[in-house]
Image (cartoon, rainbow, N blue to C red; front, side, top):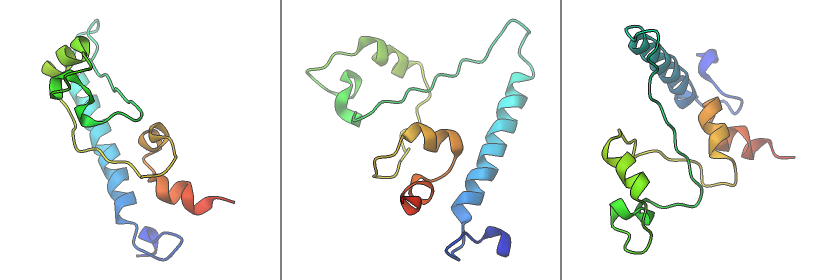
Length: 111
């Protein structure tokens, strides 16, 4: 039980869930790449933007902004539409790469 307690004494279930999820996704990605020929590479593109809402693309009904290339990418892609970040001024990229929740890593440790 001590292994899953964070510094404040609360259960850190989400932290362990993120670790297991990252391990599982890594294993699935490696297993999926096993059958690729030597000259093939998996097509993985991660797009991240700042201050952009769901309705800011023309594919979602924006009448002003035209995004034909992103619309084409949207039509041929898998989308993760339920991704949330902490409402604080911390980089989303660091949270995504480290798998640490921005609230616990940055906000609680400010000087």
